[in-house]
Length: 316
Ligand code: NDP
Image (spheres, rainbow, N blue to C red):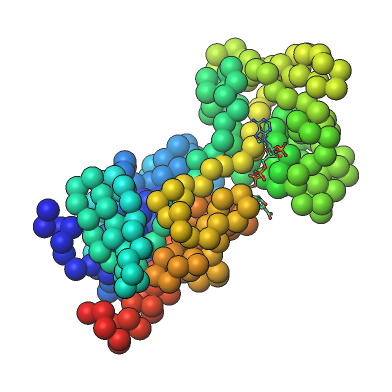
């Protein structure tokens, strides 16, 4: 296929906000950039109904509309978006990368990984049914819909504890359950949770089931591990933060942290020269659309400098 044989500067893999922002900045910098996406561009943004916190949008904007604007802006500057499935990213001995897709392959000096992460779900009854009706995986996005309501948080890591603290500013009635007898979260964040008057901590607890009236969450079934008993309790919302699986399978040679996220420096460079990682796939501390977009801009800018240096040497 002819497109795949064209000389291009940068392949961006993944069409969420991080990838689309990288594509826009790369194209504006005069690079020939292709963004490869398996499905419709937009990534996880597409599932957000009302985004209230993206700067510049005074009224809530739908994730779909925002993603569409990201895409059109990138294309307007000349970025090319290709719908295809990436099967492998080979790192060649001359430092270049060969990106193999279901439609052909590209050999390029720079690859930007924007493949994101897949949030973990509990897989319990009611979880899928009540997604968007009280079950959420993002406190910043959905917390404000449950002002002064009773909220259950599941998880014991930095996300669960950090998001509980966010939710405790919205309501005085947050209960966090964790399956162990202590939090995994950093001591400072866990300590703040345990001392917050609006948060009740219940260790050694798991969630069996989420119940509702068909349109919203009303009750949950909890399991008290220590006393080996199940009980029902009224809740208006359930926020689940049990980690995510970053999608790094295409680049097994890049350094990752203990949780599997790609390690980058502040220029979004990975351990491999020419390979950048942006958005939820990398080890950033705050995973939001705006931080993903920022990552993309940073990566494209410094990748452009990297390519200029290469062009000064041999790459044409
Ligand atoms: P983590 O993987 O760190 O924590 C997941 C938590 O969910 C753990 O407590 C785990 O329990 C629990 N869990 C996992 N599976 C289940 C299950 N099936 N049922 C019940 N509980 C379950 O994920 P996070 O999203 O919290 O953090 C991901 C990464 O992002 C980490 O590196 C974290 O440090 C970082 N991060 C940093 C922040 C910051 O610095 N401010 C903020 C947010 C994230 P168990 O402990 O028993 O394994």
